Length: 505
Image 1 (cartoon, rainbow, N blue to C red):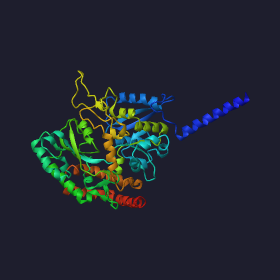
Image 2 (image 1 turned 90 degrees about the vertical axis):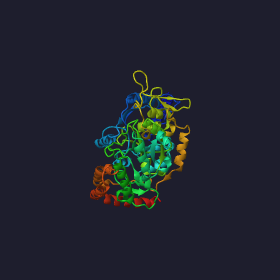
Image 3 (image 1 turned 90 degrees about the horizontal axis):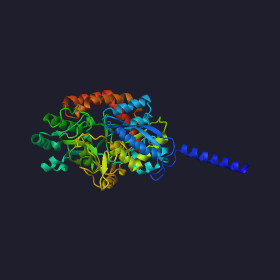
Image 4 (image 1 turned 120 degrees about the horizontal axis):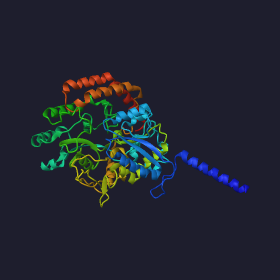
């Protein structure tokens, strides 16, 4: 009896040690789709992301929680904050220390250096290894910070986000326009004039106050963000950091835009128009947007009519492009293990990933014979489809995990069945920027960067939409940038870049 009791105690002790070791190392195995339902306490995570709150957001949230509770014992409170409010809301949450667990991180590097995000390296070799292995290694290169750490999960999508110029397909066909011939702002002039004269229902060119980056046409990329107008040439390994608004290329862009505005080609409210405020169904001839292969399908769906597009910038992977869709874990979360379980599932489980993107099968979309997701139109009280009605649920695809496990899209604008093979080929052919992964530390120059952004907000929207006279306003812009400290910031970034290049050649 004594021997049996001692043996029982030993077994219990060993079991307890194994349980504690598994918990503390974060390496407990995730149940797969064929395993028994999750048994145990469910952890709820607060998740913030960008996008207008949908009518059916709660309905989708409930369905997500039903599945995730069963698979991994985790649920979420799914909070969407509008496009114009999101960044301010997130900064407030971080500054105030408000409780949340996961968030879309548009200013990833800046907030990571502030200590906002949890370092994930150790989790990505254990509990999150499947997640790590499924994402293209170039993304991990781009999101590593200067200390070598990873503080966010990049969306596994196209590596290079190229600027595309898009046009309504019916107008292109009507006038037999070869859109591949138009690769410079200046080349558009006869086309815009023709639209103005022959198609008065169409706005020739749609701009808003901060979305366009015409400098990428000349091979430049931002070295901090687009509100700090310091850029480098992506493919020049010795390129110097410059204030783009002191270059001849910028002057040429601004002069062309000013001429187009005076001609009436550009919408009069461009300097005030919010990014993403173009309404579904609005008739616009030329619009620019960043994307990868086969973006026409998604843009056609968003616009409410078929568009065709042509990429006008090179297939270059920049730090900005790989950091464009990052989900990060709050450094102060009380549930790091649950966060990794959620992120792992979102990036490896097609059922959950499609639910986030398309909504509920049978409610928001149906699957056709090819397994493509076909949106179910919003209907009126009589059961008739409402033309151009906003969807009752829309996932913001670039913010929410691995694309390559999504069903392709069917319906009015079907995607090719080999879409993801085309994406893999596109990614394999992408060229890495010479400054991919470089992150300047400007923590000692926050007063200067804040002042520069204030000056940027004052001048950039009106200059970059052609709304104001370039001869009088551009010198004032550059003068105030100097007073704000842009030269000091540029010199500091150049010094850090030189040091970074010396060990990353």
